[in-house]
Image 1 (cartoon, rainbow, N blue to C red):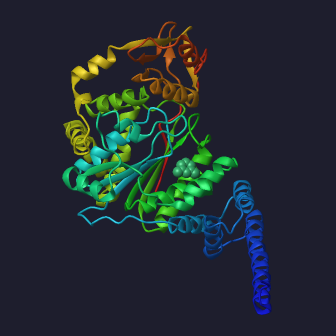
Image 2: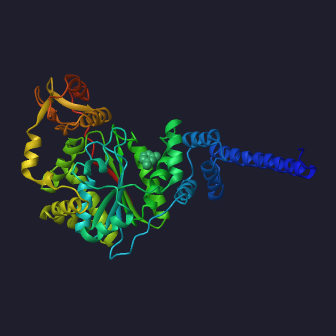
Length: 449
Ligand code: URA
């Protein structure tokens, strides 16, 4: 049956206005891309409509890709980076915790190798009476995830609800959980597209992605550890410093207390690389071992204490050191693990002695000289692969700049079975031995507050 004329007309009218709408939206989208290319201000309203449109399917993938490419090539003003962060944050839920004596604290690292600082910082801060509730990730690329480390404690339950995590904080002062809730759906969608279109490495895109998730996860006080160097997203100190400044600026504009440490990732931070080895490394530090892992963990924890309690950096640093040196942080980590259902067996000297006795291969220096360079990305990837085969991980005994003699150990692999010869060869190629000592790099380049 033919449709009545009036109905036909109204369809035509709708079509016309849809077309017009479409044209108008396309014009607006092009304007955002043009403005980005010409470094002109965009504003929160336009960014909100654009990102919202992408989530609802009204903005085409090609248009969003053009915008991401424009941001990668031309950057964004700080004002628009802040606006983009707010738009992403508002795309999903935001957690709110019951107020306590001190504000909730959180720590974020842009991802490093042999970096188990969270397992040291969380118990120090909790033992200082500051609530610490962190949502952590699993392994990403060559870096290990905190949740993977914690799951080395048999039975550890990372998939807690926020209410359950708050109960753990009530009981022991800290909880570390996997991100179960989708807090920032805009970041999920944009990150996927950035990954597909090779537009990950952009300061405002990284900053808005990281900070929107941090803001959504409910804490008031933040320390960020921005890695720079061979094994990091930001390969130069200058780029790392810019990222650190931008993230702190965005957090502060949201009314948070925040500091960012720009730290060296030309060498693995600690010695343990890969699952259980990283946990043992953290326990060693909690039991008094010295070195860069302890130093950085103390500095991050000290800063969190000073920001959360409103005391001087010196007072924060002294309190962190006292808690670590008294053994209270060790006891606190045990409590946190137990409160989340994990076995504390790995804390026992017998269990650790057993694992350390399972030498499965060594990587040795073939000549005298200095460690001139360590390929941390390759090393991290090989360690992840080795860990995935069921091994305990490895201890890397050298840092860039160390003098070495032929036969010295670069890495000791731990597992129940002998490590494959090809893996040992690949690992050896991660260490470059030079005749001259390379320039010494500091552990912390800068602290941005
Ligand atoms: N980690 C994130 O969460 N987002 C980025 O863009 C890069 C690293």
